[in-house]
Length: 141
Image (cartoon, rainbow, N blue to C red; front, top):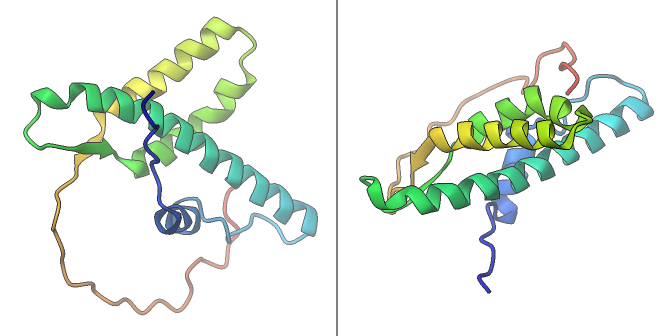
C-alpha cells in the first residue's frame, strides 16, 4: 500500500494559513465572529488539503507527457476556487450533483499546475509595510 504524499509541511501550511487564508484577519470584532471565522478558515484549509491531494494524484499520472519531472497544483488557484465553490458543493443535496461539482473543481485544478524546479533560489526583497491588512474588515468566507 502506497503512503499518501503530504501536500504541506508544517511551515508551508502555517504560511498558507497566514497569508492565503488570512487566518488572523477577522470579519468582525466580537468573540463569536472571531471564533466562527477561525473555524471556517480551518475547515476551508483542511478541505483544500484533501482536494489538493486528489488533484495532485491526477497530475502525477499525467507527468510522463510533460517537460519537467515534477509538477504541483497552483495553490493560489486552489484557494480562490474553494472560496467561491466550497459552500455550493457542501450545500448540494443530490449526491451525484455534488460528485460532479467536486470532479469539475479537481479537473480545473489539474489544468493549473506549476513546475517544481529543484535548486532554484533568488534573493529576497524586503518590504516595509506599515499595516499588513487594511483597516476594513475582510469579507466573510
